[in-house]
Length: 193
Image (tube, rainbow, N blue to C red; front, side, top):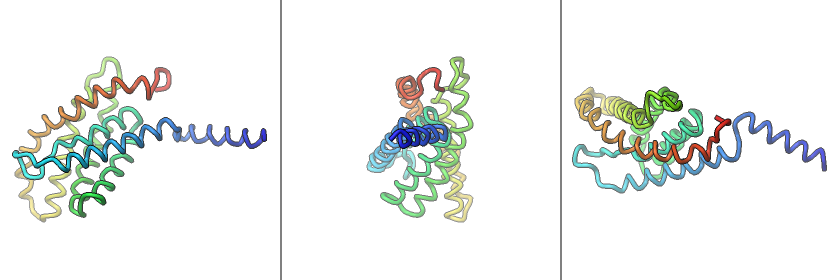
């Protein structure tokens, strides 16, 4: 009985050392579920009058939270899973390509900049990261449109999309900042960061 318990303790310690602890896995699962629910609800919204097919990207709140609270690796996994699952359930091959290009480019910007938000005297907030990630998402989707339509004409919409990145970045960044402040002490207690 003792050896079995000791083996279980060693296995648990090894899993925690590799980063697979229950709290983190549960947090990731909850954030992925939230992202999928938000993405589905957002898909039900009518398109904005500004531009056909334009959505604010509210599911990116979960990506911001995951990268900030659980790390870049978890954030990348959430991005890929969200894009894949929503495309399989609610989209098409084309929507998958658009979402993947926008999501990955947005993630790269988020992962690169989120470190600047973590200190007390931070030079940037999640709101700023969100605005820049929104612009990157639009750039990625415009690049995908150029590939799909074999044309550079989608680039003509890019400046509109960059302008729209500010309000959409605010709409996703402000809630992410508020939620992070409330969840960080619970998910990442002081001394364990």
